[in-house]
Image 1 (tube, rainbow, N blue to C red):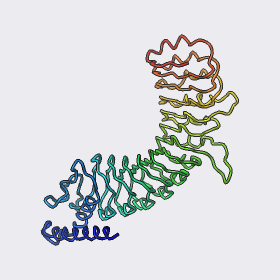
Image 2 (tube, rainbow, N blue to C red):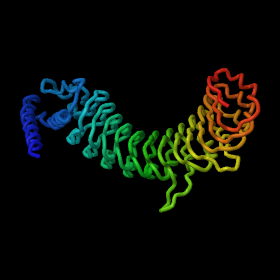
Image 3 (tube, helix red, strand yellow):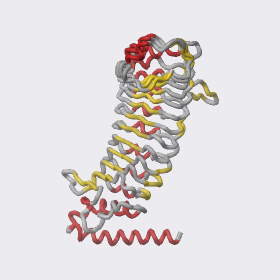
Image 4 (tube, helix red, strand yellow):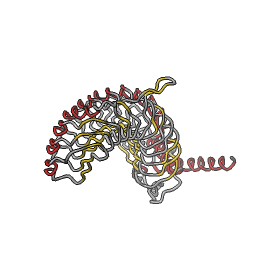
Length: 390
């Protein structure tokens, strides 16, 4: 405890001496307001424990801080205030200084692909001009600060590949300008908050964590959403002390802008929604590794609806319990289709001859089913096929 106090005292002495230098550095009291940014950056450097590329070597008294590596100043009215901090991929190690709150003109923070650790400072919520926050590929721990929702101008939030825990803050639903929300590959738990359905400008939602509960119907309000990735979670529909079946919400088909639906490796059951055909922009549908089926030999009806998805390139519904005959309509799927994966199900009958119409196919994976009969002659016309499994 005594050593910590001495260390803190030494740092404040360092700041005092630095402040005296700042007066000489800026040359006049008129510029003294810039000392706030200067000292905040110095504290950021002070807490950085490793800098193997010497990225912060220019952060010294010989250069104006606006010329330090990774620092951008700008603005017509405040040309010497820090507006961006970009130290992406510099292999820096250490916690983020809480004094970052004093960089009140910051609009962009790009610290991806480093080894910053500790908690994401609550103080970042005081950066009211912040539009871009990129902290992906680091080692941040703790929870996502709900305080970030005070950054009402925030448009892009990247927190992928960290060690974050806890739940997705309900308060994120108040960030009305948010267009990118990337939370994948962390240790987040609990439900997806329905409040995210309020983010009318959202175009990307990625979560690969340990989420549970249902996919909220509210997400169907995200008409600009083009990617929904909820891979490798444990999604179920929970009511009180009961645990009911876990269908894929039909309401997702109302998110008309969806181009990619990735629900791989969950515990979804029930049927594949027929209304997925309403997703006119759908290019990739990944439902691999679930428990989809209704057990009446008619589980493949959704393929008929996908005819309306003229940009479809990949439907992957392998490793489920789907049963039934492959419909002849399979030949009417998008001619852009390059992969068809229906393996490891209980599909029976023969391969429809219309498959020859899918001229862009490179992979046909129908293995581990109960198909009979010969491979249609038309398959020989698919000269792009590199992999065929029956």
